[in-house]
Length: 312
View 1 (cartoon, rainbow, N blue to C red):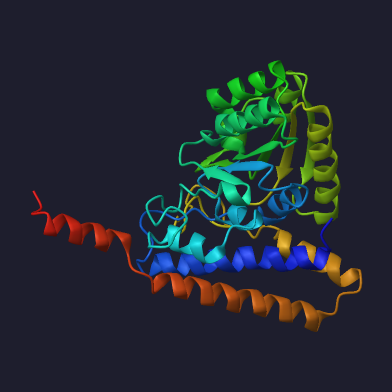
View 2: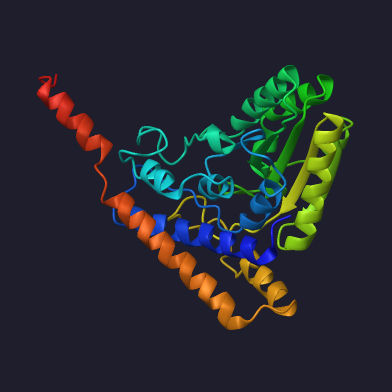
């Protein structure tokens, strides 16, 4: 298990990276909307810390910048992809919602709500068939659990006994709709009806997240059967960056990074040391995204090729 201080540094970098991407979006450098994962950093790091990428493969939603970083994806290639620049993960052609880096254990992200879940089942089936010893992990939001494809995938994972871990980041909102309005019953109750091992955990408690992830990843790997974890997390940003969020009261929410920092302080980490980690993460994020902004824009390249070809 990785040292808590190292995990904190990674979490801070994930947040700083996304904040710098948000600034790039404000400057008009990001094609399309940017969906930030602020608040979900700890659960993503806790689960990924138990994996053996690229033996294990992870799929994520449209909100997967941080998840890709947690998997160890090259941050400069990631930033270039988000900005639509040459040298990105898909040479700038996939953009913010369609990230691929299977060589790092990050199978794909997906712009369709719940669309990444059956893809993870395919990776799990491949691992089982080829007897690689690997597992697959599907990250999703609570809104995705209402999708038919997710129900079908849970059913298949149990029926076929697939080594697949379902991770739900439950922030209580499906885009702009509260889960209390749109979701019947409990997610844990639904899942247990399939006969699947399922646990609920506080997404602000890093030590608890690590123990839970260790237990469930170990279960999936040892038994070759699926498991499910629901992590209660805040959604600190809007559905997308710039969302006015008129659909909810903008009260202050508990920040998992603050909770994590307090745990470190109580266990002997010095304030100056943590400040140095935080500053280093922010400077690194600034440097990386600035370099990405200075890279050739793939849309300019495509427009030039179109014009040279005579246009219409």
